[in-house]
Length: 489
Length: 96
Image (cartoon, rainbow over all chains, first blue to last red; front, top):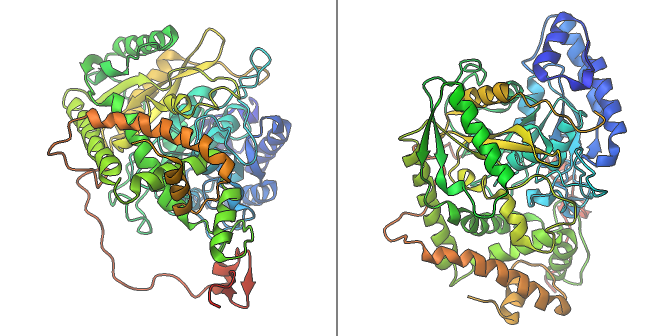
């Protein structure tokens, strides 16, 4: 049997089913890998005790032929944005010091109900605000593909710990969340698959809120099939989240293997950026030609408001964040820094508890929502957001799915872009537009740059058409056959 | 619209984040960079465009009965409080 930590979920499931491996063996192998890979700082909290307990329970269920679900016995990491019952949940922020939820988020509850085994809580950017995993209170995560030229590389963000944990073979898969690219961008930087479902597919209940009209949970895996398997276990209508879509959840694996013959793949002219590296352009061309060779029809589409997506996002997301993060007041949970008056206590707690990027975004959000400025900024941004969503709707009149690069570059060194917020924001230039429109997207590893670092291609489908998304993504994955790994793994 | 120092101080207070006087100028520069950049939206013609209020169209906001669905677990609710007095959250005195 191949190395237990190098399996896909699908392969591990087969071995478990045939009795060739137990969940305990699989879990122990990953606990050991977590320890070996501590240098990359992918986890805020390791939970080996819980993992072994759940692995043993899974093995017992298997012995009595009473399996819970499709993920039974599969060890995974959970982004530390998900509240997990009885386990420290930090959002990688100082302000949530010691917070141990007495409840379980719906998505992690669903995964538990499907039998998944939690290995630990993955590091991330503080409150999911970042594209490099350098804003975590628990320190930067290192990309397992580094170091390069003596410098450690960022894993992307905000689900940087999740992406690094999957790439470093410390878990079979991980949950992520995506607000403007936080699943897809780190997946691209770490050479793994990252999938953001349609807004409303996965319940947001119990996920620490950043920007409520954008946040969406999704799977991060080492194959497209695994992403479909894991999403099956994560998704579903939840009455506890009023924005959770009250529609049936299909079997997301149903269209795998169907190929792309007869499908139309749209190429948006506006994603061809001046100054983008040739490698990105070449990768995109390779993706286009690959899908064409597999029988898809390539069509040009236009998304005219693309260039306004990032500025729109940097009004809408901070506005919602400033409102959501008002709850951290030092009274009910987390950090409290004393002050002479109640107001002083609030001011001190929030000054010490939030990092620089979070403070900046809260202030931008407070400003754009404040009296006299609301119409000029927030209302204007919500109108442009309508135009961005309309662009996609019109594009899907002539195509079934859209193909773009995931990121404008490969992973960069830790420390770069840190003194220029806007340069950092540009990382998400290709992922933010579809987030604003609520559409499902996936990043598939598609090649290496000249320095040997992974690059991803992104597919974007119409709302609730994950079946087409997975179908095209799997075809692309198979045809390209990306099989590179970080050195030493 | 560029923020001046007084505006930065006011916004920081509205957000209940203490910013030392000496840091205000640097923060003013950072915020103005971002605000200046997002203001490019002014060039988009949004005449007659409805602001987005629902991300994925076509789904009606659900209604539910106005009834208690959870509760009766004060220990759990209070378990993470930084400071308690009996079964109450404790804060600095607000009434003399």
